[in-house]
Length: 426
Image 1: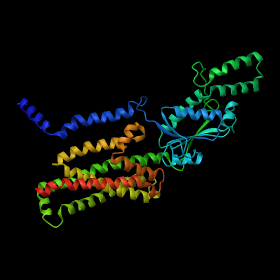
Image 2 (image 1 turned 135 degrees about the vertical axis):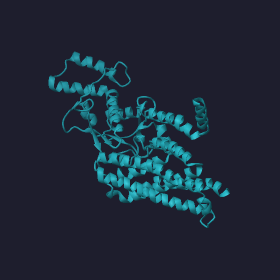
Image 3 (image 1 turned 90 degrees about the horizontal axis):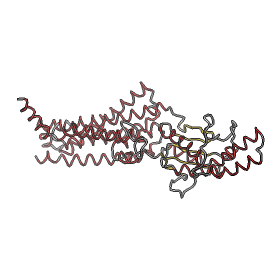
Image 4 (image 1 turned 120 degrees about the vertical axis):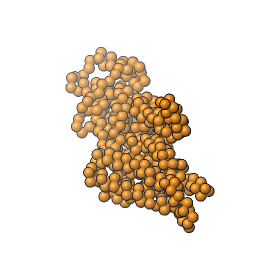
């Protein structure tokens, strides 16, 4: 008897492709995604950080630091406004704009007088300090750039800084003897970059690198970093569950097929196109209400600054809900049964959410995975919400996200209309 039941269960599983994917394929896909993001942080898959570099000093030291940062494999360095090396050279204002606009998470500013101060090994309070202009919503990039800046400063100009250290020594301890100075001159060439015999240099914890002070400046300082995280999770979780609710509500089409209601509707002047348009309108309004409730809850409980961003919020919510409603109708018209719709939507939505940034920020992913995420609905919706709530972008700056969401809506509805023809034919 048990053997017979096992055989029947095995037969049912073989016939149910969705159940097979839920049981065997989806766990492997999720494991691969999470392992790629968190399991290879020190490997070749670690994403390269986009960083802007401004050299206000123009000294030998600053030029060596710029060259060292450009040579770092973990950085994608730009020194010009357009990023191709042919446009105007970046200054502090244009670099800060790049950070504010989200083009780069960090900008390194090497101030005037840096070379002279470092060469003197100075530690005066008024000494110029390197600044990292950072978008603190990305907590990883500023720390990594700071660490790589330390590495570059230690390896790019040890001979210059050693000379400064000797001058500082003579200032307080007296001049070197001729023999000592001769020995130093013989040793300094060995400290030039690229010499494997160069002596390792040290850092000063209180003054940054080699007496070079480094300050991290939050260029989004008018905002609260906690608010950035709240807006990210509100958008990420809201969009993911919006997709689930839209696919579930769209299943009413399948219920109408089973009950025979759909045949009676199609016999009227409404037709399939009118029916899909009506359902899409209702689902869009439902989605707007769902997202609005999510963000209002964030405002009441977690202090999310919703009311100062209402125009951008409503525009993004309307376009996001419209696209999600089209997505739900497409899945419903592709499925044969409610169970098939549930399994298929779970697989697709979870994969889209993990790649698109609903579960963890896309900047933690490798460059390849970040590009893959751009094919998902979630990535464009989240980018738009973060522009509104974190970057305080005007509505006109949302045009890339709104254009993609509009195109997705058209594609989803067109696919739903085409797949629904099978009900008209029957």
